[in-house]
Image (cartoon, rainbow, N blue to C red):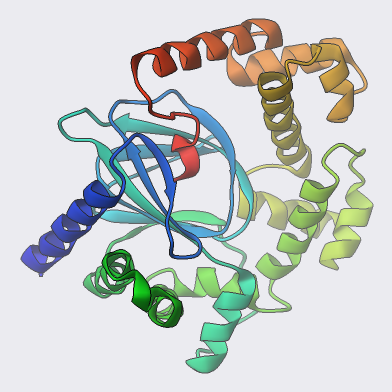
Length: 316
């Protein structure tokens, strides 16, 4: 079994190496399938992870969900079952042995379709589980993933076979150790399903004042129950969740638009520029102006030395 797993990992490593030759993120011709490569240990990257399956064929990565640290490499896979603000960093990579990974995004409807077609019955009364977790890789999961990625070598087969192999991979994940956790995001009535609706509400209106009573109504829970389940699923309070969204968006605006920090603070929902600066410094390690200057210098240095793009490395 160990030898068979190693064989599949080696095949995936070769496929990623062949199709993703430069550092960065490659959006493949297979819908929702991305290949990621990094030839060096990267800086921490702040992103909102979408629902997805991530597998590292080579190298090592760590993810922080609030204060919880998750590490995964070739013997693991990472599942994110709903949109979550995280900090990610490649921690093992070199030009000789680059970090190589695969990210497959999926939707609630795709999970629900497999549950129905395979007649998999999940208990909606099970306790809410963390929306991001690391599982032990299994041969059946690797086989399904390999069949999907191999389609990159026969693009004419992608329109017909890619949806089939993606459903197969989701099916294998649902049959695995964390199948119930994954199923809950699609099971109407489960605590995870209801919290997901509240999370979508926060993301869509991150720049607006947070009204816990309204969010609890969206989740059809009491405020105390809502707070408890939200923390169980995201490892954050609703206010911490919103704060991370605001600061990530502010950093993106400052980097892409070169706007004034005070103006950006108000745009993302802060009422106090000084509070924004304090919380920005606490999260990113530098005040807004110094942080953006440092990041731009880093990107200019990278672009001056190579034609590669480092910005999107945190996608998986």
